[in-house]
Image (tube, rainbow, N blue to C red; front, side, top):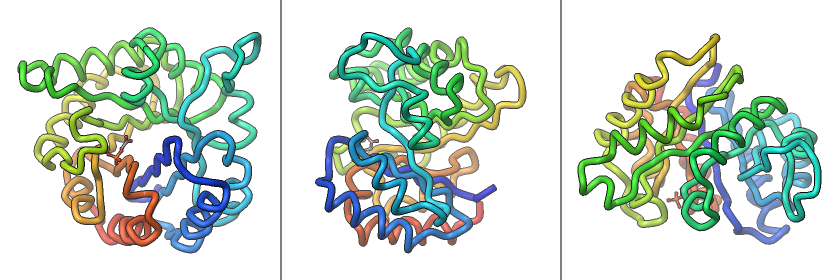
Length: 246
Ligand code: PGA
């Protein structure tokens, strides 16, 4: 299994041409020691998949509906995604805060992702208010335990993404991220079966900050937004992830 995982969350960015360019760079940068996952907008999944095919680079979606099919205008299901990609981000804080996704919805989506054969990348993280009120552990613990209530998959990636660090240019410190990762692992000590659980850090990760996170004992990689849209920064991060063996 590769040492480190690098998930690129493109959010609602990229034209078709930009998506092709980024996918091509990822294909050419792929190294065996790094599990690189590109999460483009739904509309580019197919072409990104085609470009990276055979390179070892994986593809993921940014969201899914919890039902397999039906009258849900504008939504995309797990079985549809499974034809195009292997991973799916679930419960990103932008989904929770801008689109009203509750812990209950996140739990249904996490369950659906696993049920339809996708590897979920569950996002959890506290607001600045929660951190200032000393409620960081409480929020993370609640989000994690509620999300995995019905989870039965073989593999689960959990990204600790403090809301205050996302897109702010100021990441958490490696010590803060490590503390959260440790908490997540201890919360899930009781996951049924042999789920392969890995914790990532996300929130303003850049080539400058990446090493500090992946060197932490309980952090196996990063979920990167803004910096993953810049080919030079993306390439640098893959190289950095490949050189750290912790
Ligand atoms: P950022 O986004 O790297 O731009 O902070 C991370 C994320 O929201 O997943």
